[in-house]
Every structure is written in C-alpha cells, then in structure tokens.
Image (cartoon, rainbow, N blue to C red; front, side, top):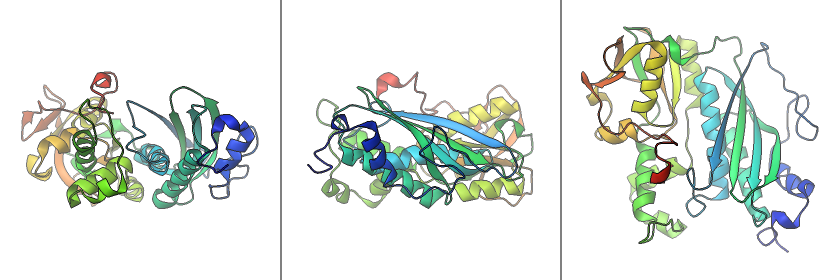
Length: 330
C-alpha cells in the first residue's frame, strides 16, 4: 500500500513516528527526539516558552489547508510568539492528536511543513520532540522554546507615553485571505469546498497573496529580534487583530495606543480587525531607529485603550475564540 492509502490506524505509534522523523532535519540539540525528553543548550540559562493549539473546525479546515500548509502555520504562529518576547526560537515540541483514518501521507506532509517553516523563519530551530494521540478531531498543539541570548525579555507592559508605535510586517493581508475563503470556497450551505490548484490560479494577485498569507503566515522573526536589540519598550505578535492586540498591550502598560488612520492603509477595517498576519506591534522610545513603520503614538491613559485619529475605534477588533466560535471564522 502507498502512504496515501495507509492510515495511522493501521500502524504502530513507532511507525507513525518514524514517518514524521524521516521528514525532519537531524537534530543539533545535545539530546534530540528518541528519548523520554529532549535536552537543549540555552546560552544564558533562560528559556522563553509558549504554546498554541490548532483545532480542526474553529482554526482550520482540511478542505482549505494542505498538510504542508498546516505544518507551516502551526510552527509559524508559535515562532512569532517567541520572537515577540525578543527571544531566538530554538526548538518546537509538537503534539498531534488525529483520527485513525488519517493517511500517513498527511502526517508526513505536516512534518514537511514544520521543517519548511523552521528553515524559512528561524534557521537553527527544529522539532525536538512531541506526542502522538488518537482523537476524533484533528488537533495540532505546538510548544515553542526560545533563547534570550543575553537580552531582557520584551513584554507587553513596557510602553510609556511618548513612545512611537510601529508595525513590523503586513496588516490586513491574511484577513483578506480569510474573506476569500469564506466567499469563494464555500458551497450554498456555507460548508467549505476544496481549494484546488486551478481555483487558486484563478484568483487575482491581491486575493492570491491574501490566501497564501492566511494559509502560511510569514512572521518577520529576524526583524522582531532586531527590534528588541534596538530598544523596543513593548512588543507583541499581532495574531487576533491589530485593534484587539493593541488593546491588550495598552491595558498591560496602562496607556492608550493612538493610531494614525493614514498610516494603516486604505482598508482601515481590515487593518485593525483582520488578524492572523503575525507581524509585530512594537513601541520604541521617541527617536529610536528600529525596524517597522510608524503607525501611531503612545499617550497617557484616557477613557479607552485604543483610538484612531483621536476617536475610539468602534469597528471589529479581531478574533476572540470564545466570542466568535459560533461565527466559524477561526
């Protein structure tokens, strides 16, 4: 039988695991996959850790995402969180729960995507371990670890009045891709339909770029580390929407983030509420020459956490999994 025909339910855990490890680069850790736990070398003794879970249904649809896309995205969203703290990603731990009917070829494609994301976004980072389980719902849980390399962590709570607000990366591009999926790739009942290569080729340039960024986010990891080195006072990954994430940073710092509408692009609603671009919201002391483009200013805390041209933002702020679950726009 071919990999496409063989399912994980027909194999042992060891056979499935070998199917994953055969697609990943060799570990450079002191102790990598194969033992009960990995051993990592961390230069300054401090480890930054984060985890994120992607669940079939609210977070992705198999009709829309290939296995490689899913592997890439599950790595990228975690690498971005590590970099937002000013840390260099060094390792991923991947837990995969899947139905017994899952083809082995899918699992291998997922491993390929994880490897591609590490190579593209954080060279030197690798999958160093994880877990396999059976579940009725396909679930991918990734833990990412990072090294501060002598830096102090950049937290959400460090912004101060007078700081410049910058964005590193894109705004609204992945949100456009989500709109494409929910308008072009659903049937009359709203159920997802397969995104074929032919269908993707028929999209216009902006829609195609949005779809690519929605399915494979490309966080600018190296620029986030440069921002930390440049003296960023606060930073966070923009995953759930710029307005919502800016509110979180403002609340943590006890300030108001005052955006300049003209700096956010032509589609203000998508820039502020789209989410999933996985760029970085950064604040710098005035006059700092750091990565990103300026989009506003930190001001003393007012009545609201976020303003646009001096007025409270009343449009969509972004994605909240508890508030938006029923909407199906994960």
